[in-house]
Length: 307
Length: 301
Image (tube, rainbow over all chains, first blue to last red):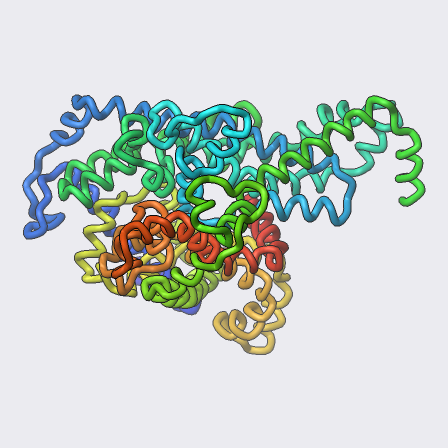
């Protein structure tokens, strides 16, 4: 009797919220079909997948693909390249937007400041394809603008796009050119919400502009910085496929091949789907562990956490 | 306020003046670094093809010529790409709003039965996913490979946009409106469509613009899921010209190979201009919406 009553209560509650559920329905269904089913699809990393048997009937192979991957010479190369690109990106891409925001904050309010912000964030709206095309064009040894500019000083540039040593720097610097200004907007906003009486009090105490920057501006940015840092760390192994793939060529592959481009090459172009899915799963799991760890550390150290 | 400002200016110490000098020097250098490459693309695209090939163009255009634009605009593939990109962008914005705005609103309501489970359902994809290969196979299994639908239906849900709109509904739309709507006998749906949506125009504009730019510039989905050139968007056309160097063979059929080679570098620069122009021209006018969007999105909710 009591149970029946409870069952009725559930129905009643469901019925009461039915319009809310209706609004959720489209996104719910799309997530189910195109995000949650592939999540189940990771089982193929433990199978010898083929189209005929599908996710459900393909024969199991356990951890075979993972073991093969960890033991291959490629594993260390991919892991090293991925880590180099992402740590290098963070080492410059994390502090530079903060420095930009601090510099921008020193400008007097007015039209020029707004103009500066517009200019700095403009490259963010160039597509990845165009950006990579520009990099390749500019670095061309025969007709590129960089070799022409170097020529003004009597220097000669090597073929940088074909150089394994230059690749990480090309990747990181072009990324900075495109995104540093855009990434600084968040910090500029945080700075603009600083209570102006703080600056006035500091001025009264005879603080110079540089001292105000050190003792007011930077501490004010710490919460925003921690959140951004956690988000960044989470994507360490998620080095953007799009840009690396476009800048890659046969000459620079020893340093430009990363996990995501290899998964594409192996699974989609090469048709070895189970192996590629296993490598992709390894990537996802490590990334997840990283976010959770950094989140915890940040929570302990600064009290700022994502979750 | 004005008085305070002048007072501060009088007090400016020597140290502060040097500091200001350094700041403004850095600002000028930064602007040159950002703007020069863009300026260079423009002048190269209208220069004489031979000068471009020899790397002679540096600070101003050399021997004005519109040859690059003439050849490029005659290319049929460019227009196919443009048409497809416009189609995918318009339809993409449509489905994106249709799917994410109602979800954001629904998740902003409190006291929903099963709310915790529902929130978990929407949060999990932010941290875990099947990865490229299972997703790709799934799309093939649904028969969406090489169809236009794959560009704007399967991945229309964006957890990020849902959170942004949910935060907006929570913080900018007073709860009293709901109370008075109820008194007037409106249900949740009526409240959403008649009262909330008109008030949510700013956030709808932000999400629409954001998504439009993202869709216009993306190439990953098309690279993976569209094989047919007739369906491919502009970015894949640009990729063929800029990255895969296909100018010479595909575009200038019938002309001598030397002639093709002569124009190929020039056409790359004109392709950059033609491909980026719409977004670049639009950006300064819609900048404030983008900045506003970043702020809403950065709020923890």
